[in-house]
Length: 451
Image: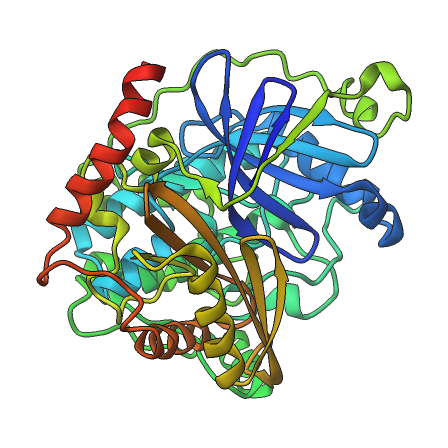
């Protein structure tokens, strides 16, 4: 087990993974606050010439202070790494809520859309354009409020014409003018993506969805879509004005705010006074002077990492630990977990054998593993990260998450993986209550010691 500390933050499990960064659960030891820590390797950033992009992402998140945007607390650096400390949002992705329910009610869809428009409008007022708005980048907090995340593709217009010139974003959500590669207005492009998101919330599926990219782009350019019968006239009207392929005639933010359908049950967001938005300290992150580096500590012990009580509670969105368990294995999520009473080393061996039998290459490091598919799927090769945690004596939580690849392919993998491990996974008689109580008993002393 490696217990790691960076400055005042104690680092826990990995909760997300991308091509150039990992996101770790961490806890501020001075305040007890849970945070998400985005960890980037300096050598990788320099190798891929990403310094300007990382500086831009940090700058943008420092500029944007809004209740519906994931908050950046601070940025730290060591000799080899950059640590971006972010608000820890416990409610999961809006994408998972859509997959779970199929579609949301019009009232619930409107609430999320109102919060989305509030946040995007605020970003635009700061000259920030997200450029990759989609349900996967919209998180939910413990109160069910929307939070925009992932500003990695965001931009501030720098060209003399005031337009953006980089084609980026997710094809199904991207505006037609972005695909034309002739320059586009970032605000109008974001509004288009908001319209696609509203459609998805209410329909449960995409307005533009084709395997063939040529057909997909044609339908986007022609705004060729149909609203389902359950859309109200007001929703249909607003969506059609947003999904206007001509950015010059597309409805703008003030028009959306004046729309009768949008205004229904609208609760204006309360903005706090702007804090110090200086960007002077960003250069220090890439400064090689020793006095700028944060202190890193490591304690290495045998055995899997121990998941403490606070991590368990944040995982379960409160004290209802039944949310930790996949009682519906048909629910598509990027991160899934199960409990086992099998000894940790035996459990690792069983999972390794299972993954290999399913045609995956296995890489091991301590109580962590990575499975990589040997063939490419819809969006490239699937890679899955696995880690074993001790949550109580002789009781282990296995966290499985998609590292790279298609979410639906990951879902199929996880279902088959669990089926092959069914005699290893511990479950009570069709209920998570006994699991919850045992975990609470195992964690309660840790909670009492830290409160």
